Length: 125
Image (cartoon, rainbow, N blue to C red; front, side, top):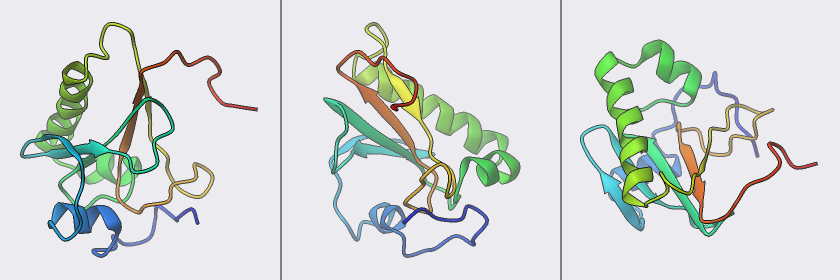
């Protein structure tokens, strides 16, 4: 069920549990600001999630309350992952779902990186 991005951060959400090492993930990248791992329900040949290591529910609170170092570090991590996966030449799609209308399911900011095929429509009918 989609979540309300205005809700307080839930320390027991699945991504918080992954960050604490309570749940496993197929790690692609990690640094001081972000963790990237393969999605367990991939929607493309390459489907990786990048999450900040800080407790932000959505893009909105991340950009409003994150430090400059957190924001820059997270954005650089997304770029590092796309280059590590060699998606920078053929191309890729980034997606952030936020709130109910954006169909955000986990109350922890996450960027989806999709690659490995050509994407046509911006939004499916």
